[in-house]
Amino acid sequence: MDAKAVKKLKVAELKSELKKLGLPTDGLKAVLVARLTSALESSANEEVKDDNGVADMEVEEKVVEPPPAKKQKKEPVAAPAPAPAPAPTPAPAPAPKPRPPPPPPPACPVVPLPQPAPPKTKPKTSPQTCPYLDTIHRPLLDFDQLKTCSVTLTRSSVYSCLTCGKYFSGRGKSSPAFTHSVELGHNVYVSLTGPGGLPTDPKFYCLPDGYEIKDEPSLRPIRSAVKPTHTPLSVSTLDQNVELSSDAFDNKYLRGYVSLNNLSKTDYISTSVQGLCHVKSVRDYFLLGKELELEGARNGVNLQSGQVGCLVLRFGEVVRKVWSEGRFRVAVDPQDLVQEIVLQSKGKFQIGKQGNVSDFMTWLINMLHRGLLALMDKKSRKKKTTIITESFQGTVVVRSITTQKKDASTENSEFDDSVLSTNKKGLGEESAELEVSETDTTTNFLNLTLDIPHKPLFKDDDKGGLVIPQEPISELLGKFDGKRYLDAVQGGNLTKRRYTIQKLPKYLVLHLGRFTQNQFGKTEKVRDCEDEPQRGAKRRALGMRLLHAPRTKKILN
Image 1 (cartoon, rainbow, N blue to C red):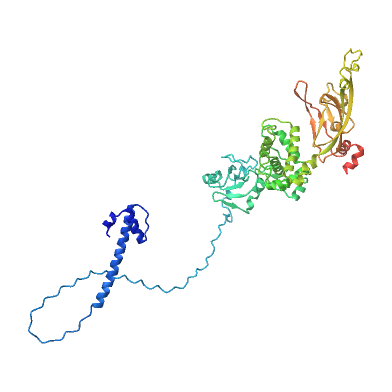
Image 2: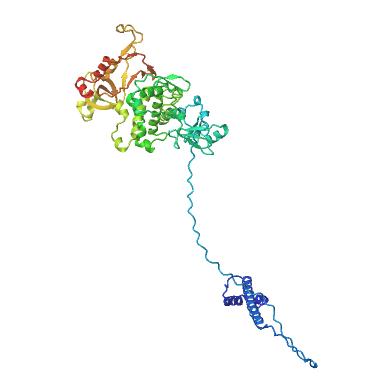
């Protein structure tokens, strides 16, 4: 069957022929025709090859060389007989297939030699000495500024350029710090904040190379300026220290007695912070960084900006900077602390708005107490005791005598004749009685408010005729001696109160109430001077007077 005959077949016939040959029967007619044609051609070629091989073998077997002819006598030639018909010549056969060469002998197995493991990629480390350390310019460095990037204004992963003193974020190839190092050739940077914007241990890097500079003695003063640290031995000798320290401009200063910059009417914040920095127990607690050892500080709980724990960390930074020995500038800039105060007070204490130092001091002490409790573990938090309460918390007993009117109509019937009286005031008036009640209340306090008497109209001869009279502070503290009653109005009822200090704190915070409001709603200031007793017997006698005699020995011991 040739190709033309195959094309004339129908689809069913094509499928039957393909099925006989064991070929697939799916597809269109053209596909079936091509498949059957190629199968027939391949089978025909194989038959031809087999026939040619057999013919060649037969020819080789029949071809035999004839023996040499012998000489014969010549005989008369007869008429030639007719030649037989020539036999058909077979078609030329193709060459036989060459036999495949024998397989080579098996080679010896090649065992691969063990190769050493590729070396692990080590992080970039600094060479023996960084070649750019001479580009550091210390007079331009100020680590008290608000730690925000000067390009993106972000507070996370901030680095300070030690050549120009500017702040940039990041160390990657697309970060502002990397771009600054490439454009201006400023190569040495120190880390100020971590990914969350919280202070971190200062580390030094060289950009754009990207390696960390370690164990460089010349960078230790910068590390101390970024994050001052104190040891128990140095803290114990602070009170006896009289040596002056020097800043980067060779200005002399005494540790602990440095000024805080005024950020526009923030002097009341500076005075309160300075006062707390000189309370020994509070000072030693924050100088040794004990707030960083609390569970919340280690785990990063309640440390984000706007949380109470962050205020404790900012306050601790300022305390350590005030008592630092290696400062680059004499004055301390409390920008981070002030910004946190503005945020957590919800605008009550703001930059550019004068505040009351008494209100702020009370708020700050309470917030520090709450922040320390938030950083403690659950077991320590239940005790509700911090370094703030150990230093400033005392106990006072308040006895209140309240006099209120008792209406007679509340006890009698509406139509009772006893409700009406026939006294001189007239008929039909309600009679009233006075009811007196006494209560004792024990409360804790962190500071005491002293009332200053108003300036007299005429000069007092007993005080030497002073234009501005002086009031001994011992007289003002008589408010808490437990002997005198003070008048007050509460809920429209007349109340008399007597204050008796039951337990004195280690450090007594006194507030002199100079500002009062008059009946017209204006604030008035009392300009009297307070005569504070000198150290020694007078001051000890003042403390004894606050505690009444029966409880003095028990409490002081």
